[in-house]
Amino acid sequence: MLFHSSIRTELARSFGVTLVVLVTVVMTMMLIRTLGQAAVGTFDPADVMLVMGYTVLGHLPSILTMSLFIAVVGTLSRMYRDSEMVIWLASGRGLTSLLGPLLRFAWPILVGVLALSVLAWPWSQQRIVELRNHYETRGDLDRVQPGFFQASAAGTRVFFVEKDLSGSGEAKNVFIATQEDGKETVTSARKGRIEHRLGERFLLLEQGQRLEREVGKAEIKLSEFESYALKIGNAEINLQSASPERSRNTLALITEPTVTNLGELSWRLGLALAAVNLVVIGLVISHVNPRVGRSGNLMFALFAFVIYFNLTSVGVNWISSGRVSFGAFMLSLHGGTLACGVFWLFVRHNQLSWRTLLPRRPHATRAAS
Image (cartoon, rainbow, N blue to C red; front, side, top):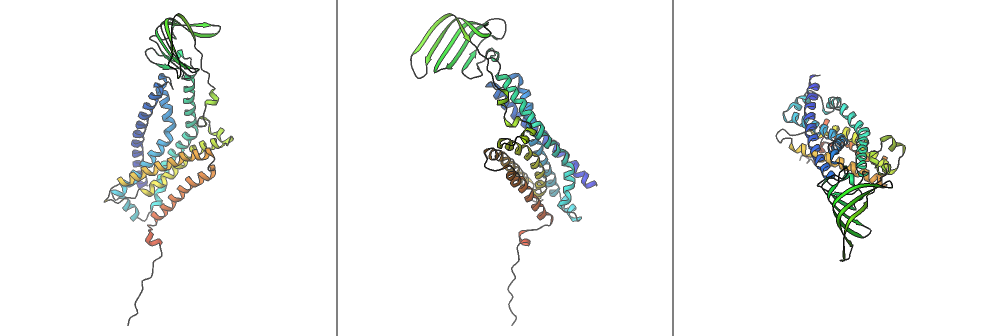
């Protein structure tokens, strides 16, 4: 049908523009966030773009859902504003007839949201955890960059050198600040190099001084040395224990139905269910008065999307803490939202109002004299 094809064409155009804008905004925000994490030593600065890509991939289901919702509301609101919807309704077709073209356009996006939330989301989170753990398990000296203050993996030491200690040459102007066992020490040396002794790594400093102070005391001990060896251990982190529930695959969450796993499962399945419900809600709330404009509908759509997804996030915490069961939450939130949307669509389709739903009071008649 020509009318259906024109609606799908406009929906595709609006969806594409919205998707590009949202992806650009999210990529900018994730880039700033990832750069901040790399600055404090969470990620390797060389992996910033890779981490940002994985992060955007994990948020792609939410981006696709929001783009679809905005496209539906914006397109149908434009049709109301330009009186195109009046022609459609005057031809004897109601709002429910629009569900067909909307779902025919949206079903590939809905399938993509489900696939991304079930498969791509845990995979991207697992890759991010692996990159973080791989960087944290590197040796303290391997993480040092010349000209920058760098904290150790345990956070108890701060290093500064003018030359990379991982190379074969010597380092100059080495600075090390530590806080361990209730003592604060500041060690500086003109030269430094790495030596291997009995299978362990040591930083051998030459021509320097060491400042030592116990925490809570004002006494300071200052000593100078010609040669000083400092043991540099490698941090070891159990990658399996460091992996959170969000990085586990969906099949593992289903086979091990703990409260934390069910909480994460509610988020992944909730993204797909929310996308379906928002298509129905978008059809209902797109009604607009041509004399008023459609800005009010877009604002309401934005608030509805934010509230819906915030409730989905809150449900993860409620299920993980045992406050509500998985089935009760999914049925109450997503099932209740779908029921409200269908009822609202029924009211709009039949052009019902509170005046028609409420019983009318009979008017008192006066008997003719």
